Image (cartoon, rainbow, N blue to C red; front, side, top):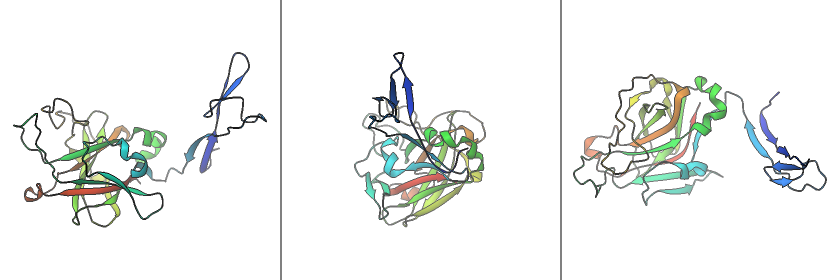
Length: 241
């Protein structure tokens, strides 16, 4: 009975005294009453199962990223109406921790985005998805290697590294090429000497139905003589298709 489009609806609660409250307005009465003036409704997008599954949108989701904040990060409008890019420029991949001065340097900046709410209504379509598409660009007028990984519900991670160019474009990563990668403990625990990576002996295979979050890492795949350089990406969106 469902058709492609938008499904709008109200939730109406009947009380013991036979009065009604309509949501999302939270007002007494029902939408079809002549004196009910707030007819705002809940709305759900209804899409074909072939449509992409959108996992991240910078305009809506940048504040939800689990990350260590840097003053150079900013949300900036692009030339396209309603589109934004979240610029993450890093002067250094490794910064000395004043509470752990003897720590071995780890040249890795990682951040995470939880996606359970993004896939909730599309679980039946996950198995038909073939590629993960990153839309964005690199900063500093040079390409940047970016590792993108799915973090599973048991803490293991499967991903790959792609090179992001200086032009804003779609960068494709095939799900069939995913391999085990290290899981970064995000958000970072306190005290800071606790392990940077999740230590585990998990041997489970990749199962797209068990994904919970996306882990982004700048550092893996970068040559040793470039680790101390400036690196950065600008992310617009992420989707499965």
